[in-house]
Amino acid sequence: MQGRNTRWRRHRAEQRGFSLVELMVVIAIIGLLSTIVAVNVLKSGAKARREKVKADIKAISDAIMIMYNDTGVMPESLEELVQSSAEDWNGPYITGGMKALRDPWKRPYVYVYDGAGDPPFLLGSYGADGAPGGEGDAADIFNREDAQ
Image 1 (cartoon, rainbow, N blue to C red):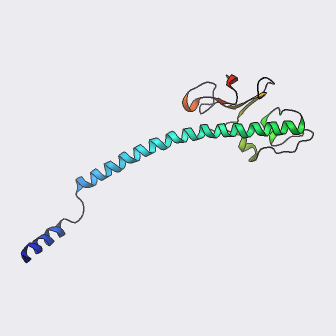
Image 2 (cartoon, one colour; image 1 turned 180 degrees about the horizontal axis):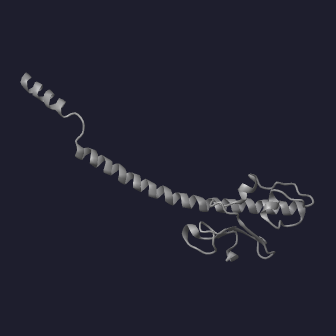
Image 3 (tube, rainbow, N blue to C red; image 1 turned 180 degrees about the vertical axis):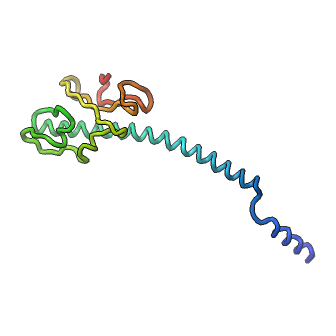
């Protein structure tokens, strides 16, 4: 009986470590899982940028209306939310300065006071491509449906 134990121990000692095939299989599985995770993270990043634009539009719209309530005039540009010489100006109306007036793609938000519609201004972003129109990550996001 003791001979069997000795042979088994010797056999076990010779098998320490992993074979090349086992290592290749593990590396392939890790690579596959990494690819799946990376694809899903990239998709969620695009969605997060679009959601940030929607939240920014809401915050900037509120700041515009507060400025209007204080001064009685709509700002001619978004920069007036940060710095203005308007009478009764109690700003800045947006925190973060000029940086807060840029979309996630580092472009200034589009603002046009037209006096029509509710609210009486267009505010938004042209998306990832920075041009009107587009689909997916490049789609326009505005506070009104008639922005096109």
